[in-house]
Image (cartoon, rainbow, N blue to C red; front, side, top):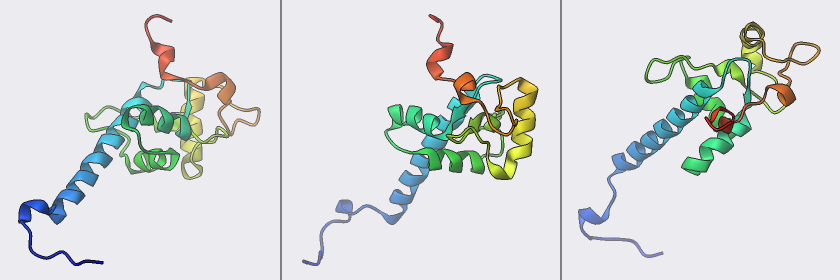
Length: 138
């Protein structure tokens, strides 16, 4: 492999720029996830995978784990100070995060979200929400 020598500094990307780009991309992704989660109506829910799929339609990146990381790193409010109803995002089986199970189930019950017979999971067949559900023409 040939070693690069010389050349103009304009040809090289400064080390800090790559980190700044990653930070900006992460902030953009987090903003999109939080904005979508804020739109989920009371008593409805989405899965991490569905949130990821919808965000990826625009940003072309991310997955369920990244959605979980955004929510886990969130303070419960987005950058605008608006509350983020994190409890409305569940796994594919309808379970809220295990380490916040009681708090999430309390919120979901208070909203009247349909739950499984044992009351430990969201009944996704009845509660799943899609963003197109709130379009004016429906």
